[in-house]
Length: 148
Image (cartoon, rainbow, N blue to C red; front, side):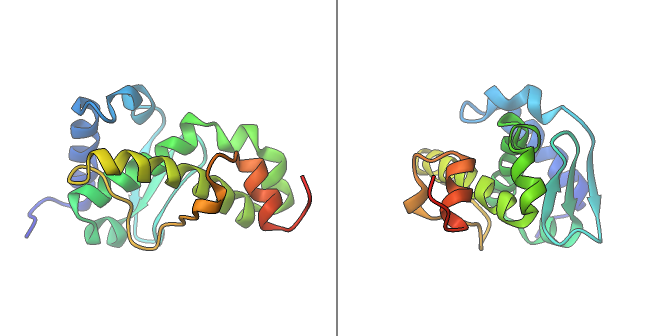
């Protein structure tokens, strides 16, 4: 189906997203840090600057879900999740990442409604409408059952 390597697919997706009206405002963020593919990464991750994508995971994505994946990782950078919510990561890294994912993914879901052929979240993405309108701290507090 596709004769591009996973790395080439990620590069192509970056270029397409930098030129698309739905995502071009993130062009500068797409260029921040290194972008690497790895056989040891199951999905994708970022440290707030650099981004790693799992080779096999990228290979399974459609163009639209690859765009959703790339936007997802870059929105972590946009919202400075690793810096702004550092205290949450120190307390519970897994729950902090999930909280940030819920916030980001609702934004991508909304964007995907207008551009369904261009952007879509990969299967299994964390989506919960009960977190709509909340920030990462609020989602984190709700997830672990603490009153905010």
